[in-house]
Length: 291
Image (cartoon, rainbow, N blue to C red; front, side):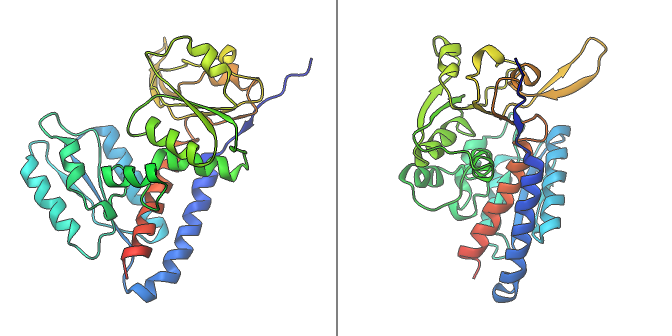
């Protein structure tokens, strides 16, 4: 019997397409608004992973014409100091998006800082007001990673209406907003998590399986319905017996690619889309509130 290989969902290519679209929007709006859009990414401490992410975000901003107002603070920066910075950015008319890069040092309260950001400048789409807008189906800034997943499904013309969608993971960053966005697109949604019984049976029922649990190779071929769409949001660093480290997802790519209909790679799938939708949110805020 012939083995069919899943079609690869290329997040890198779609992210590049989005950046081209955003660049054109900025070129059109900038003469009317009189300034470029602005994004401020706040980073505290010297986490090397965070530093790499921030550099990537700043490069992406530059490529589409978004001005960066990023600030890098020493590890010992206090909560009060950061709250003052956020207040200043909230009232800065050049800034359309504000993002606090996680994780933060242990002495800082990320949730309280997030609540200080003006909801209309919440580039990550995680302020309670923006999550409430999502629940109500109202326009607003959307959580970047699930928003990116929805754009990938749209670009590949994957039908969602009436389909069985299973989301593995219930975080406020991905799982919960992901389920709401799928529901908004008329999918029938199941959320599964670490306490769910018989994960295999739940996953086997999915026409669209989206996994965001942070456990390397948790999902294998036996858990995939033949022809299903598999979107792997997990990013896990693993080290092999030779000491070489690499990034893998929650899905065992090599075994599932012969069962799934569509599949995202890790890296190169959802990751680039998260940054693209951060830029999208910033330009959305610029177009609505920047005039």
